[in-house]
Length: 233
Image 1 (cartoon, rainbow, N blue to C red):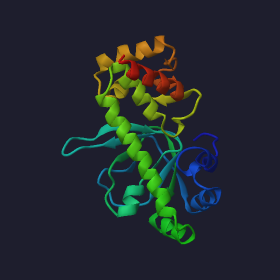
Image 2 (spheres, helix red, strand yellow):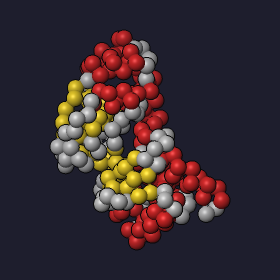
Image 3 (cartoon, rainbow, N blue to C red):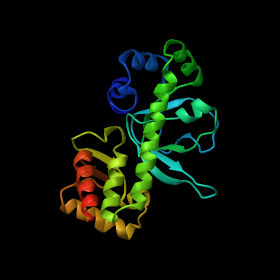
């Protein structure tokens, strides 16, 4: 793994970073950090209830399924992204499958850890509900991206969603994603995704200088996408 400070990253990015410092420190004190090799499963769809995971380093594939359909790639999680609160809150099975896209450093707070935190922080469950709202917002962005706008707008909206915890970062970030994967997450065929990506490149809204990686400014891309939707483009 890289020479990153996993605790520092989680203090700065994502859901945990938005919580009070005393809670952040207590949360990380009861957490366990572990490395997950690329390709390994973090947990499976329908798996048993458990605690909450956060990504401190690396990228994870988030797969979901509807009905009897096989799981599909719906999201690429990045550092600062958390998952598992729905299972922890309700005792219900896991609703998504998480697989390491690259080597991961993950932070895990068990059900026992959550119970110990509740004694010190009565608002714990309200804080976890904030995480659920973040996932709901992402799901609505997913639904909107596959149903509204032309191919270019769908691709732009999907990239903004993939920015996750860095969605409001007014700076360049990168997502490790192929053209085909991005098209699938945007509800497009590969033939439709290619021209849309090239159009965004010509507008200097994205860069693909590194193979299998898309670089962009999520704030600028979101603003451009909103202008095009409002103008009917």
